[in-house]
Image (tube, rainbow, N blue to C red; front, side, top):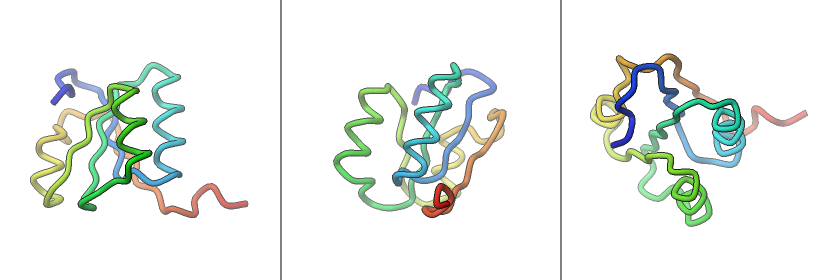
Length: 86
């Protein structure tokens, strides 16, 4: 786990909307940790998160949020997959 600093952003999910949001957070200099309760985020999402050096935490939500150091996060982002729809 690379979320050692206080002030990271926890993003829930790894769908297309979340990936675009993560990309913008990284461009703004934020440290990001992704929590995904789904067994497989998808090959594209996994590859992008790996390239971006963004940790992906999976598992039961309570344990995954604890591993992502929710209590030390500066923000939590939860998006619906249609949040970018016009």
